Length: 271
Image (cartoon, rainbow, N blue to C red; front, side, top):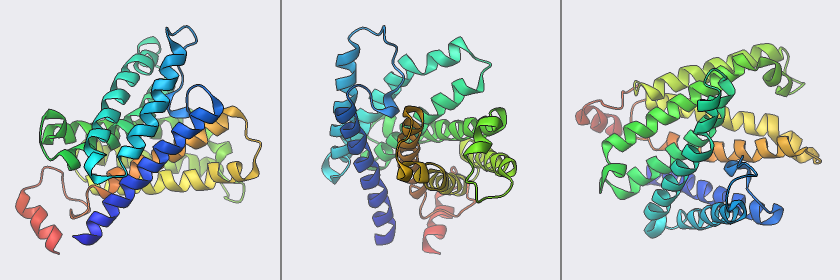
């Protein structure tokens, strides 16, 4: 039990520190941090909204570091992300429902939403709708759909994905398609709740590998163009969020359905 709690606490801390770092990036650069973009220039009170997003990143990130404040911090982050996504990301799907990039963009926010939601479920322990079992199911559905969108983007935009494969890896086209397939399989396992622990762990591992092998060397080399800098920050945020979700299934069997009887989960924990 101690090991399980340690993994969950560590993942929550990393997620919290990541949010704080994103808030600091916004303060240094001025405007919106990468996870809060894009916001149209014509948006009313745009500067005030940028400060609000920075404030939420800093305060919620700090709140997640302490057990007593973690639940309300996760709830505030969840609500703000839901509202922000509805206002600034969902319109992409409405305007271009047949473009896969619309779903890829929404998927990035869905991962953060799912992580915040699952944290709140674990910390609030069924106090209301958001922290109940239905809330957990919705969070898993959002995360699974996000992973599926990531996988499809590897196929729809293979001309953009393959060049990102490190030069020392042969067959960049193979790796673009292979990682896309992994996202699809993991996404289905999570969204259908058939093997959430397996799917979440595989997804977290792949996002981590991509972050370090693709964006890490570019960051270390310096002089990144704005787009790649934004993608690097977003990729790290997704990595932190993915591990929050992955470790939430500790104690379950790897291929155990989410809705398996309590007895099955008890045996898995004791194994």
